[in-house]
Amino acid sequence: MTLPVTIFTWIMAVLPILVLLVLMVKLQMGAVKAAPIGLCVSAVSALIVYKASIPHVFMEMLKGVWSALPILIVVWTAILLYEVVNEAKAFQVFRKSMGKVTQNELLQIMLLAWVFTSFLQGITGFGVPVAVGAPLLIGIGMRPFWAVIIPLLAHTWGNTYGTLGAAWDSLAIQANMVDNVAMLNATSLWATAFIWIWNFTSGMMLCWFYGKGKALKKGFPAVLVISTIHGGGQMLVSQFNATLACFVPTVVAIGAIVVLGRTPWYKDPWRVEESPVMDRSAGSAEEEDAPEDMSVLQAFLPYIVLTILTLVILLVRPIKEFLGQVKLGFAFPGMVTGYGYEDPAADPFSPLAIFTHAGMFLLVSAIFGFFYFKSKGWLHEDSGAMIGRRTVKKTIPSSISVICFIAMSKVMGGTGQTTVMAQGIAGVMGEAYVALSPIVGLLGSFMTSSNMASNILFGSFQLATANFLGLNPAPVLGAQTAGGAIGAAICPGNIVLGCTTAGIMGQEGKVLQKVLPITLAAAAIVGVIMYVACILL
Image (cartoon, rainbow, N blue to C red):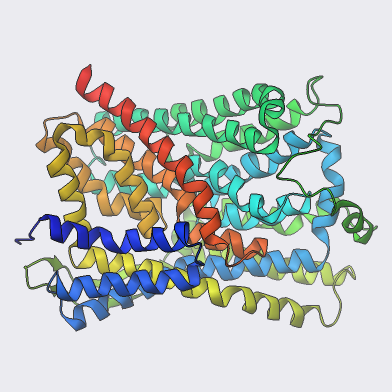
């Protein structure tokens, strides 16, 4: 393989991403329009600059379509679940009942946007925390735009060890750490330390968005407690059991925030009246429409079923292994560019375990919720048709954008563009590259809509670069997956999913514009710490 790493080839490799950022951030173009353009740019670059054949590019696009399916299944079923719960007016019941947990509005937002979405990330992932969190926040009076942004930032700390350690396992495999316990534990310590910084930062950002200085002062004790449980708990548990490193702390945090709600500091009614994230005009009408005979337990029952179903299937090994036997996948032939860059054959390629996928849990929960609510008289005869129509209307635009985003990443990865982009950065930066290692992880998440895919894409590259530069690979790999976790906040798939369930499709560019500077700053801070740790000490 003789891929040319020149200024021209590097610019052409970066171009599809730059085009996306300009269209979505600068020009405020929606994802459904911007994503196909980015895909076209990557395809043209692959054909003309990277000497890929038309069948090669077409095959990579097909891989993208297949790779997008696991995300799309979550999109479809998460929206279906939301529409079922919304049609039964269960969100209004949930909103009215929040005062029983705590009458402090800031703590209510922390509970839903940070603690509960993190819990969902621990067991499901795949965008479910944002898809579920956004409508729940809207249900307690948050403006839809902020109902997407806040959980996007707040849940991503759990992205490495969430989904029962899926992203971490992928990094361990790519970096050949599975049988190297010392290396595994050292990398885990670095990763969890970096992630803890992000967890605390996102908690403080939540307070700042809600009410600036007032909310920072009021929320700091809760942020300190929850972040210590989240970040410190993950650091501790990851040394013994990576599968439960996110899940266990999130469970403890749920109990902790309930206890906090009964302390003198948080038990009394408190809110920032002029909060820019809250819509004060929407409260009374929604509360009057809430079914009088529906309890909060009944309103939340579909999500309880989702939680129980996920835990039982994924944590009980015999059940998981039995259901995991059913996989669907297709064979793809190996392809080689004119430069000799090979994308190896796969049989099957990225097989989908249907019955252990988050989409299956969401679908079962939605079906259960529909029949349960209907049996209680909270859904009408025509409710099913209305739910179906709204679900289809919302999922078509988001499906197009997700497919194009993932197909673009496959074209770039399969034709050598991603490799040239990463090698160019490392070659120019030298040892200072370590400061950019979390940015590479973040970039991988943005490109692929997945921290797990980012670790697969760049894990071995980060290891090779660290060894080439004579650096300790543990902090570099830790920064890779920490950057990938931070980058989950700008994953196009997560943004599209949140905007869809929040009912603000077309505003993905505005959301990205708000979130991007925060994530870049956080990744840069991790990079500075990396540089000090690896170079100066």
